Image (tube, rainbow, N blue to C red; front, side, top):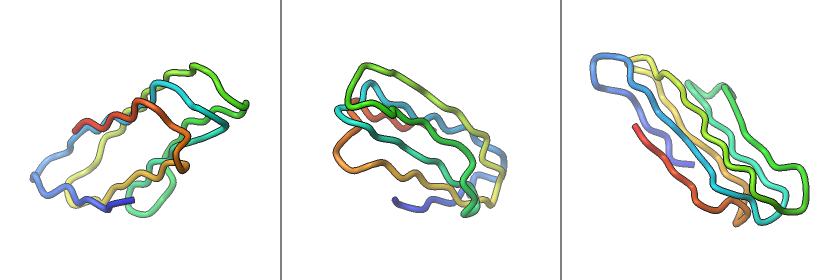
Length: 78
């Protein structure tokens, strides 16, 4: 939910991952306020590891939203 801005002067890559979901859950990634990608687990629970990667252009904002308390093993890399 925290908005970041790429001020490096060049594109960067971010990676967002989840190890498992304790209930149905999701995470979304937004670039410049636009929903760019997501991962979800539609069932009650299960091991469904997922990682998504995105290129963030210089000067762009980016943030993630995660369903409350349902995603285990959250990872964020830049």
